[in-house]
Amino acid sequence: MDTRAIFDFVVTFANGGNLRGERFPLDLPRPEVSEDEIASLLVAHLGLLMVGRVELRNVRRVKEPHRGSPGVPRASSGHRRLFDLSHPIHHGLVTYPGLPAPEISDHLSREASVGKYAPGVTFQIGRISLVANTGTYLDSPWHRYADGVDLAGLPLGVLVDLDGVVLRAAVAGRRAIDVLELAPHEVRGKAVLLHTGWDVHFATPQYGKDAPFLTDAGAAWLVTQGAALVGIDSINIDDMGDGARPAHSRLLAAGIPIVEHLRGLEQLPPSGFRFSAAPPRIQGLGTFPVRAYAVVDGQRTWGPGAG
Image (cartoon, rainbow, N blue to C red):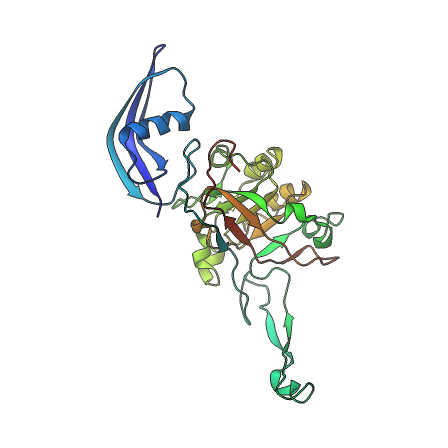
C-alpha cells in the first residue's frame, strides 16, 4: 500500500505574503520521508516560486493509494508488472440490466471429437452467443453515430500501448465526475481511466443503481484536452437516467473510444503505465468485449510531463 502525508502548513514567500493549508494530503515516494523532504515535495507539487520558509504542523502518515501528486516521484518496484482490468465472461453473466446474458456451449465437444483425429487426440470447438455490450467492452464511434468509425476502422494507435493516467473519483456520496476533478491531470494523448470503485458491485443488482458517471462538461474538457481514450469502472460512462447520453455523444463524436466495466483500477499508480484494450477487428459493429490490461514498468516515475 502507498503512503500519503496529511498535514497543515504555512508557506511564507521571500517577496511577501503567505499561503496556508489545513489537512493537506500529499503522496510520498516512500514511508520514511522526512518533514524537510515533505516541505520540498509540497513546494514542487504546488509549483511555488520565491519561497522563503515552509512550516509543517500536525504531520501524520497514512497507508492509502496515491492520487497523483504532481512533482512527487513514484517509488520504483524494480520490475515490470501486468494488471488484468477485465471482468471474465461466463455463461449467464448479466453485465447490463435488461440485456441478454451470453450463452456458451460446445459446437464440438471433446467426447464428440473422439475418432475424428488420431487415437488419443481430442479437440473442443466452442460456441458463444452474446450481445456486444457484455463484460468489459469498448465503444467505437459507430456505436453512437451511423457515419462513425466501426471496430474494424479503429487504428491500433488509439487502442494499445497508450500512456495512461488514473483519476481517483471514489468519493462516498458523489456520483458526478466533473471538470474540477479532471483539470489537475495532463491527459493529451493518454488513456484516461476513471476509478470510482463501482466495480465491486459488478453482476449484482446494486451495479445499476446510482452509479458514478462522467458529466457532459467533463467529457467536453477531455475532448478539448486531447484524451486518446476514456475508461470507467462503472456500468455506464453516462448517467443512466439521462437519455441524451452526453458523454458518449461528445467523446465518440471526437473519435475517442470508451471502455466501460473496467475493474481493479485501484491496483494502478496514478500514472506511469501503459494501457491496452483491443477488440476483434469486426466490420459493421460498434461495440465488443476486450481484454483490457495495464503494464507498469517499475523503473518509471511520474509527475509533470511524465509518461
